[in-house]
Picture: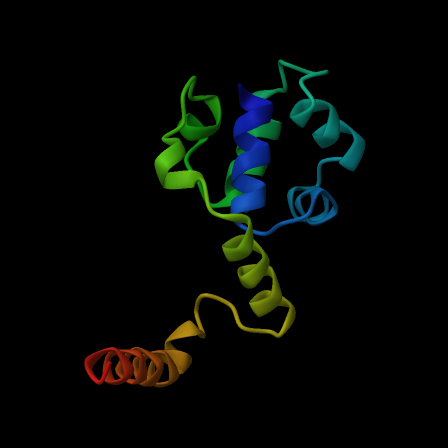
Length: 115
């Protein structure tokens, strides 16, 4: 349960196991063991560190059933977000691209209306 939740949230956010280890100050092998359910009882301190990096409440990591509809993203979207991050575009800067997004929406509607 905890391992699956951590894995799904980490993937959703486009964070590698190494990045999570570095940011949370928890060893990569320990995190891997948690995700692979080899360690099913990590300490609350470790869970708090992971939750902080994943920007979620500890309760979500401990939840028996996460809301999969809200946390599951298609692989293409995850890859797109990872690519944006690699280009230096984080969620704080995404508003800078709103004009481009609005133009694409307008263009799509324009093409659809003329068909």
